[in-house]
Image (cartoon, rainbow, N blue to C red):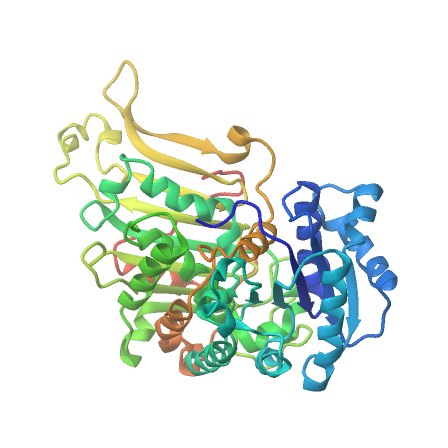
Amino acid sequence: MKPAVPGPCVLVVFGASGDLTRRKIIPALYDLFQRGQLPRRFAILGVSRSGMSDEAYRDHLAQWAGEMARQHSEAAWSQFARHIHYCAADATRVDAFSAVGAAIESAGARHECGSSILFYLSVAPQLYIPIIDNLAQSGLITEGKRWCSINRDETPWQRIIVEKPFGVDLESARSLNRALGRTFEEESIFRIDHYLGKELVQNLLVLRFANTIFEPLWNRRYIDHVQITAAETVGVESRGEFYDRAGAIRDMIQSHLLQVLALVAMEPPGRYADAPIRREKIKVTEAIRIATAEEAAGRCALGQYGRGPRDEAPYRGGKGVAPDSSTETFAAIRFDIDNWRWSGVPFFVRTGKAMARKLTEVVLTFRQPPIDLFSSLSEAHASCGNRPPNRLVINIQPDEGISLRFEGKVPGEMRIESVKLDFDYAARFGGEAIEAYGPLILDAMRGDQTLFKHRDEVEGAWRAVAPFLDPALRRGIAGNYAPGTWGPPESEHLLANSGCTWHNPGIEETR
């Protein structure tokens, strides 16, 4: 059983002056501090190349903490900031680690943190392996000694958090995993995916395995198909240089959305613990059917937004985007899971920029009853014939909640209408869902890997999307959908081929 409150440690953030650190990591830690969830003895050491004193670094972060944290007071920030320190060093040079090691020791001694260290790679992906290799040579990692300890749970630990992307394809992901494995045990590697920290993603396991009314129906006998959508109304904005190298499949489907798929499709774990849950997720990724090169074109729809009806700028020509770019800003893919539970049930996964509305959701559409009992009444009452199937919608963001659509009789006449049971997360539990980064960092401090990816999940996801990364599938996609729509027409055809339609809620519609 993992401890409820993490023990003392030093959090070392490489890339301390970067955007992720100041906008997400430090505000998340500040929120945890104000809620009393951080250990009483902790230190944060930022490592970056820029020359800065501790005070200058704290001043640099203060503005962002005030803007991005959920609550803020000068007194609380002053208390929290005393735990923040800075070391100017180029972590890609092994000779810089003598200064990093001395700064870790100093911060640990000042705050009585002991020798446990959590490293966080908040840097550009191309710097991951050089920094990991330098950590291996620095003498800061003592993984093997813990296995030889009389009581290894009381021995100082070293863990590492790695941000996505975990490679750009299967081979680069394997290379990164090999580098991590040369330095850290798998139980000490935390591949972070902030989607897994979202409340409604975590709630998927509770919905399925704490409710008898759902789990018996959660299979091929009762479910017709599954849709997973992550849509954004904005374009790529200032991320053009990164996005043009990545695209929608690498940026969203391979990482975030296949994790959501795994939680929807996994078998019940033997118990609620990190190892059993991750084993079941791995089985899902291993069971995804790998499309052949010939099948890939019929199993995906790719798009790139053009100029909008109100003269919105097209993707091509944006800052950092190649003028002849064929990078997809929209992708919809059909995945099939070849196991006993899901054989024959298509999973449709889509994501896109400049879409009709901001929405992340899971939709399970149930099969129709085997006999349409009320079809004989349809001549007199048109509403009785050809009724829509039952549907379960799980809103991950925004408007977090769950709704179930079913059919009911209108009072006083033999007429059928769809009705909805709705659970609104904020209305029931109050306030907004907690920012994902804070709980995930806390779990890493505790050594709980439940919401982090195993290397086999990462590599399995790359195998699943590899056929859809073929440049040939991107020919002619430029401008094939307009901003403010639900993507290119080919996306609708992808579902129509299986007798399905996308759940495209209106602007004012909730679930």
